[in-house]
Image (cartoon, rainbow, N blue to C red; front, side, top):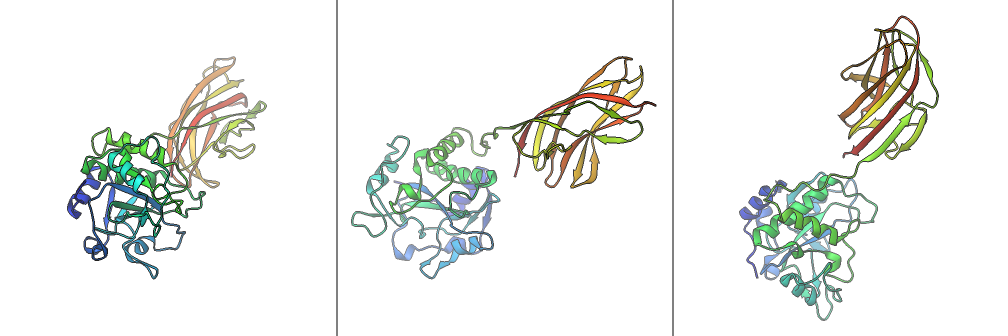
Length: 353
């Protein structure tokens, strides 16, 4: 049994957990307490909003609609990862649910999932969830296809962990609406068991330290299908005509672009040059483009001729902004054409949002 957090304590808990918090004007007195009790509280419930672009989703959660007055949740977590506080007290979000689920949450006594729910709002055995759960309405179409951006998902985990930490609860005090009511499907697009594992990981660290797991990188392995001549005197983009692996899909067939922002990448380009006179130089560098427009260059690496075959491994590591793409360019500073025998790029790319 727990007394609900005051508005000040809730804000402090969210900020301590590292959430970006926006206090919607009037949220501290926006509630449905005149319709029934608020508390004791036992957990936090996750929802999706079933809204698309163009919807004032925060306003909807604050005010509600003709069939269901607001607030519709304690807060609305938008796709940019901001926690918009919309209600302080009882909110119209949970409705009726299953007593067995409530008991399992209170005792944190279940395994991977709470017991199957057999109740819903208005059913004979339903208990009032609006009195017992904080609610996070999370911006999403709810079709199972609309993505959950990393910034939003991290905010959802942190906001839930903030409530659990403030009350001394564990991760099993977090449930989805579909685990409470047998006629609800939210949230769609991720699994609540995995969500609870992330809440547990956040609670295992001091407040504000959890930043989620770094996503798995994608592998890119490109090369030139055949050797080609490199004339002296001008920067020339390497055209990667051999594509062995392109998990990001950023490399156009036969094109020079190997990464597109927003992303981070780290790897190498291995170059083999023939015909470069002893002491002469071919320079290599990464260059950023916006479309076909050259925008920026990065530090130069040099291949010095040996009179025979010349080899170099050039690092390619960078954070690339949205709208930018990256190429590798070569400049032959010798007085004669040289042959690019091979150019093999191998990189790991972490896409960002």
